Length: 82
Image 1 (cartoon, helix red, strand yellow):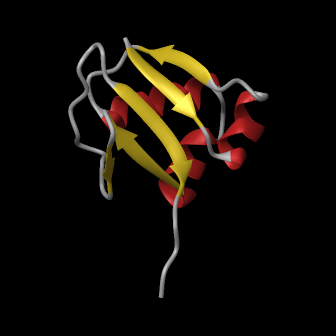
Image 2 (cartoon, rainbow, N blue to C red; image 1 turned 120 degrees about the vertical axis):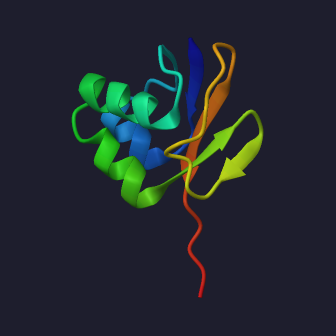
């Protein structure tokens, strides 16, 4: 199962402060759907305001990215720019 680490304060509001959890998913899309089922509304937040790092690499459009059973997925605040 992928190890999810939440460091975004917005995400922590949905998870009740839980910072680490395991999710059975083989793609980021499935991971987000599983997180949304567990924490309703979190999927929308991730899509709009959260960046995703997989095994230390930040992905801009990660929906189709594959996950290994031992992947670490970090949910971080998206940095805006102009």
